Length: 228
Image (cartoon, rainbow, N blue to C red; front, side):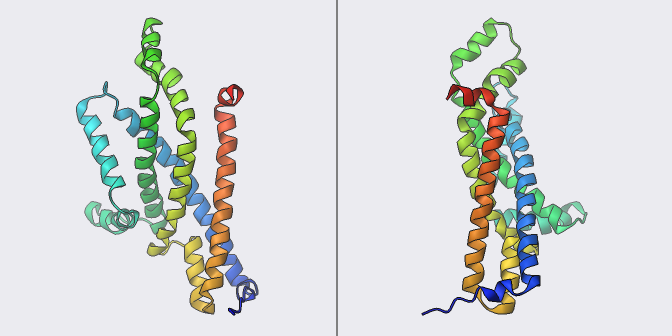
């Protein structure tokens, strides 16, 4: 029978601190990347509306397809190593990781939001025209609020899924939770126990994100909660 030795992790203050720091790094990278990715994704979704100039529309569509059809690890390496060469600049790997996460999240969020916009009854848009509302007022006050409420569960699920892929940033030496696990297992050779701990910690972070996003929905769309 396998001899579990979790104490090989807990007895070292260095290992415990690495896990805590890694969890915090994963949390803030995903949180900031998710917020920025949502804002960019929202703009990309709106850019695909038929009323938008066709050049902008097809550029947004091409960007989304490029991101959604390439692996995150390739995007990460391109941002971390390719862009500095192409643009002759140098910044930290943390900034590169945050940019790669933002770009990756934005493409997936854009498709979800676009589907929500497309699901809105066209009769409501015609009614807004009859009330002499501008296109901007129709979009911001009528279409977007309803669209976001409809797709909110999908946005949350997609965010959690993408959060669980951010462990790949450890490949460019970002000291996130996955990096912490590898750091510990390389020193105590207790890979099985280490990755059980990582599994539990990733699940805890995922549940924390779900809780925070549910609270955000209640704050952002109180009228939607009242209708249920």
